[in-house]
Image (cartoon, rainbow, N blue to C red; front, side, top):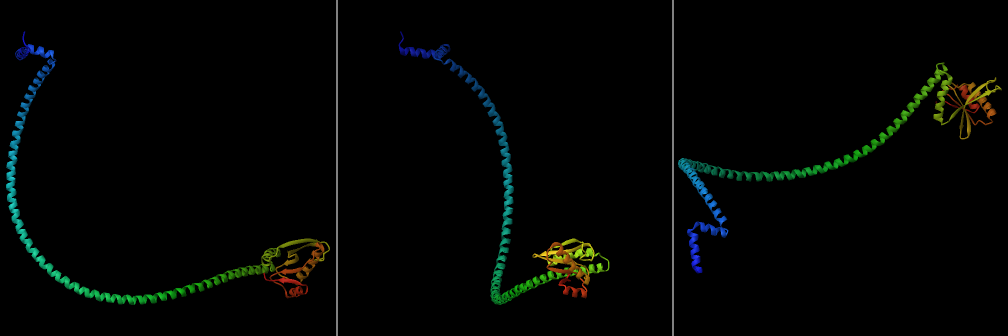
Length: 321
């Protein structure tokens, strides 16, 4: 019987020399699949090696082309550097010449600046002197202007005061003139109305306007001028007190402050009108039982005899129409 060491040695030898035994053992211990994968990996490695060789070959070709291109670039670069070196030499020569020219111009400019500085200093001195004189003249001018402005302000204040007083005086005068114009307009209108009434009275007298139309027009004037409310009173005089025979009698009546006034409006007052009004008053008192306090004739024209009769019979004649 083999010992443990001899058995291990025998098994190892079989694993190395006997492929079938090796695979059988591998299968028993689960290495069969691993070995198959190794074989597959070997195949893939072979393929990868082939691809790698082809890639290296391709890269070698590209590297050769790049080397050739680099060589061309190096040649071009060297030629460019050579050209640039020549250009730099030329530029350096031009730069040196330019610096020399600039140095000369700068030296001339420095001399010009020194001359300008000298002129500026002299100009500043002259300007300082002129500015001092201008400042002195300006101060004196301001003083003179301040004095003139103060005088002008005082004069303007006085003018403003006079203007305000003048405006007040003009306002008073304008107010008075307006009042006078209003009064003049009122008097003028009243004069026109008076003239119109006189013309109407003349027209009535000469038959150009009826007495009744004139009376109606003048009745409104009486109401406005005297402040009376005129009413027409009419009555049938059966006894003939007024005209001596039975007739219809009319007269204007005014009740003012509880007093009764009889008013006769006519374009031309005659003596007969005075007596007729007295008889109408008698008829009115007898018919109404009320006492007549005042008799009045309103007319633009009245005869001298009519005025005398009115005075004797206590009849007031109003001609301011």
